Length: 357
Image 1 (cartoon, one colour):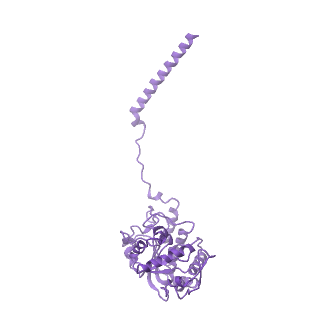
Image 2 (cartoon, helix red, strand yellow):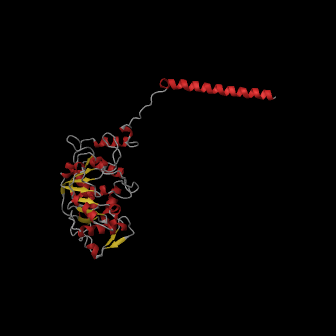
Image 3 (cartoon, rainbow, N blue to C red):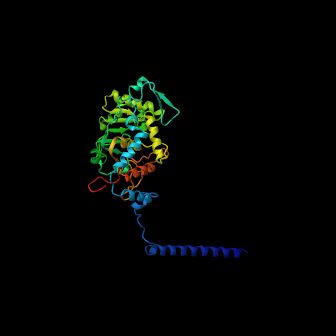
C-alpha cells in the first residue's frame, strides 16, 4: 500500500514538471512571434467633428436650411410685429420704471412672485429715472448682443459697434481681446442679481471693485431687475447707491415688472412655454419696438457651431450653462429664427469677416 502511494506521488510530480515545461515552451513561442500574431497597437484618433453634437446635428441641419435662404427685410411684417408688441406690452412707455409712470406710494407687484408686492417709498422713488429713455425715440439700427459661444473668433466686433444703439446682457467682459469679436460700444447693459451676489458679495462690503468693473461700459444705461423677486430688491438698490456714491457715469434704471408680465404673456401666445424669459429675448423684444433694424448676435443655443459642428462654449468667455428649467433657449431661438425668416429681424450666426454671413 505504501509503495502504491509512493508511485502515485512520483507520477503527480512528473506531470507537474512536464506541465511547467510545456507552459514555458508555449510562452517562449508566443513571445518570439507576438508581432506576427497580434496587430500593432493603434493610436486613438480624435473624435470627428460630426460626432461632437450628439442628438442635435439633425436639428442644426434643419435650422441652417432655413437660415441659409437669402435674407431680406420685410417692411410690412416689421411694422405689423412692432404694432403687436406695442399694443400688448407698450415697451416705449412701460419697459422701464420712471418717476412719471410709478409715483410715490405705488404698489409694485413682483413679476416673479405675484403674491408679493412693494409700496414705493420716497427713498426708492428717488432712484427712479425721471424720463423713460425710449419714449418717442426710435433708433435706425440696434445690435442686441447675447453672450453665446458662437461669438468666439467671429470678428463681429466692428460690425456690432457700427450699430446706432447697442444692447448687452449681464455685464459681459469686453476687453482682453474679446473686443475684436464682440465690440466695446455699449448703450445699455443688463446685470443679473446673481452676478452681484456671487462676484461682488451682494455689495455688502467693498463696492469699489464693482464700480471699477463698470468703466468699460462708459455712461450706458444699467438695466436692473430690481422688482422681479423680492430678494433682488436690496442688492439692486445697493448697486444704484454704489454707482452714485463713487460718481460712476453709468445710469441705473429698473425693469418694470408690469411690462415683464405683459411680455411673458405675449410670447406665450406665440407658443413659448418657458418658466421665465431670458434676458436676451427681453432685450430683443425691446429692440423690436424701439429700433427700425434689429440685428442679433450671440443667440445660438447649441453646443456645436452651425458651420462645421465643432464644439463651442456656452458663453464666449466661459462654459457656465444657464438654468434649463427656468429658460428654454432652443424654443426662444426657434421663435427668433421664425422672425428672421419673415424678415422682421436679422440673426447673425456666422463669422462677420468679408464675404461671410
